[in-house]
Length: 174
Image (tube, rainbow, N blue to C red):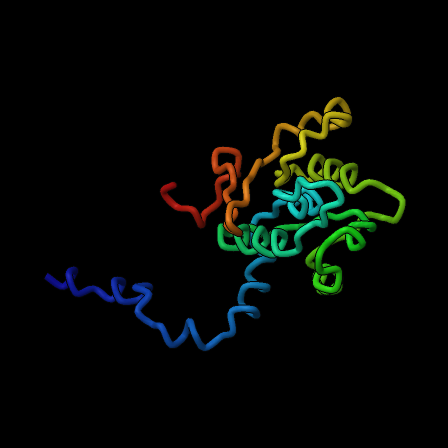
């Protein structure tokens, strides 16, 4: 009858709230992020979602919401943006800060981020979060196009097409 009270039940039961709250979430999430599967994000496409009026500025909140959603799903998001994007968003200083923290990679000035997004996706075999169908580059990068993950942002909440997301350990059973 020893088995019922075996030690292996107590090891990973998750009943240690103290050890979880002791480390600041920012520290643990960054360290953890780097070990998680990578996913590319088309920053401009995310920033301009739901911004359809002429001369609209992109939303940095959209970008932050997308980052949080992907981290929560267990991914390490790599954001790639045009160098000119900071002149087209509502909070350029926040975007600048994300770049300085290394959270956003900037395409070289005078080039299009699309090319680098698609080339990197092909090279590393990574999915791309974007609603852009990259029509002018489909022939050049057919594989990258197949790995596109569409999304919506509704009232600040990110909804990703889970059917197109690669399955990773953290979304167990879904």
